[in-house]
Amino acid sequence: MSVTRAVVLGCGSALPDRVLTNAELAEMVETSDEWIVQRTGIRERRIVSEGETTADLGLRAAQRALADAGVEAETIDLIVLATATPDNTFPATAVTIQERLGISSGAAFDLQAVCSGFVFALTTAEAYLKNGLATRALVIGAETFSRILDWQDRSTCVLFGDGAGAVVLEAQPGAGTSADRGILASKLRSDGRHKEKLYVDGGPSSTQTVGHLRMQGREVFKYAVAMITDVIEDVFEKTGTTADDIAWFVPHQANKRIIDATARKLSIPDSKVVTTVDRHGNTSAASIPLALDVAVKDGRIKRGDLVLLEAMGGGFTWGACLLRW
Ligand code: UT7
Image (cartoon, rainbow, N blue to C red; front, side, top):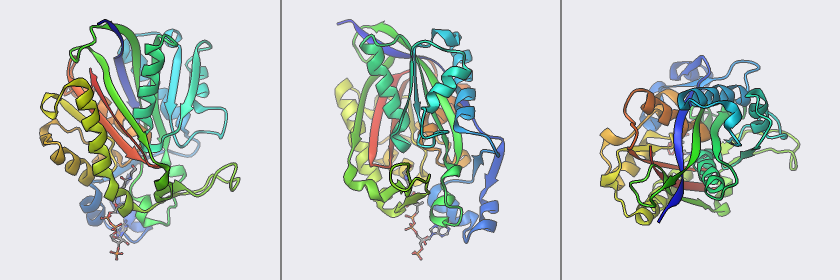
């Protein structure tokens, strides 16, 4: 059966120049490099400089993805930007990126699913491509979480970083089997009963402020592995594949312990796991496309490889996506 697949043509990423180390954080709050590394695996993260915004990072990642794909910006007819840290409440930061890329046709909008944003955005763009609503899409994850952190709260400020990643997707015909290139299956979930475990304590309609990130870290940790493995098992079932078939596991980079526990539960060997949390921290919706770009550019992920993505975050939201690169 012939089907339309959303195939990745190229990827790119961008990080701010400024590196913030654990040692520097230990001078700001009561913490230590040892605690942060042991509990999270994070050694350093990047932080935007004054005036640098989510659109700046997202634009750079998008330009690099377009160059990698070898396509012109004007051929893009859909931009989906996953972000929880937009430049403004509105308009969508995606339209700023659209304008700065010189695109004035097609559609551009932001998508808000916090740390799961990139998996949600990829799945949304795929649905548009499959239904003929667009032909070539830019899917971007870009965040400046340093802007919404409470820098006095050691339980959260050591965990997050800034960055952006992007992929170019194109609608292409496929045979309808798991040998096709492109997105093969996705599963998205949300459960608002958990919304108070990870949230920002401000917003335009409630406090008229931006607010700060608040998290019950241990509570999030408790649910993470089970929720993630559940959606991964769903995409395996939908495609008739197993963990043995995947070439690369590219998880959301929140915590090395969550990544390791998930890989162990699925019997995925360490050698197939892409980990960047040590250098990037948790960059929310940007973490997966950043990790993808690292592993593509260093030669690990190659055309034809089966790649498994997953994320879980505020909401809770969580999801998995299986694609052939
Ligand atoms: O991407 C969105 C999803 N978010 C996540 O996936 C985050 C999930 N949660 C986690 O990654 C972990 O729960 C954390 C890394 C946030 C915390 O690790 P934990 O092993 O769950 O530690 P904890 O929260 O149970 O805290 C243990 C202790 C506490 O002290 P007491 O109460 O045992 O005396 C904290 O006050 O560690 C203390 N603590 C710190 N100590 C030094 C909390 N933050 C720090 C810190 N430095 N930065």
